[in-house]
Image 1: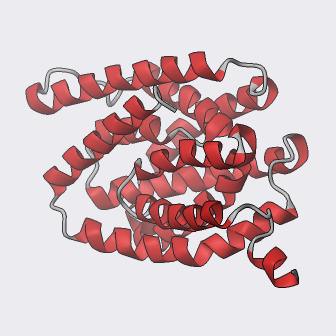
Image 2: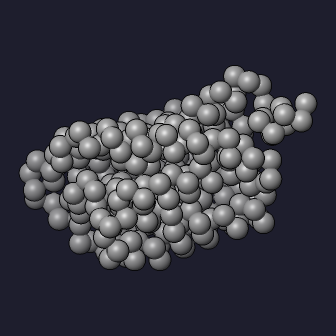
Image 3: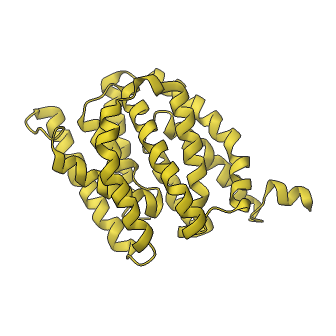
Length: 254
């Protein structure tokens, strides 16, 4: 009985427990290069553990993934881009802390999904035509930063938004991964006290589950890094566009 409590602290059924560990692998793969892949884990966890509770379970895993990504790509980060996005993202997080339990999640996810689809369209048009300059737009950056901060607090769902911003900067894939890792690490660390003290979604039991997930997540990060190493720069950009687009569409069916 004691062993069962240590291995399965939330006392979920073993099917749920197995799916949770498998999901940890995909989070690791996502964090080390295939950005956006973890978006498909978010609705799965919401179904298994409940919407609000699932956010607290996922957060420590995302932090571990960020740390592993930095182990591989920390030298490639663009610090200026991180500093530019932090202020609006922090504001978005603070807004979400206070109104997150009252906002209609259905309406928000549809609005966010629509905005992401529009942004993907603009970026793809710019990719082929080169006629739209949004990389230097403060309005574009601040809007995505605010929306991303809100989305990351509500449901760890900011991946597509920030991916769009980084893609608009046309960063090489190592810089894309490293910049994103630093940025997510700072934001996710900032969120932890609110989850512990305000929302109470991170507990000793959920952290025990995270400890079971970490080894598999780390394996996923090494797998993701190996996969990314085989993908040339331009196909990598198109792959991230595709994952971002699919994850945006997935918001409509969560």
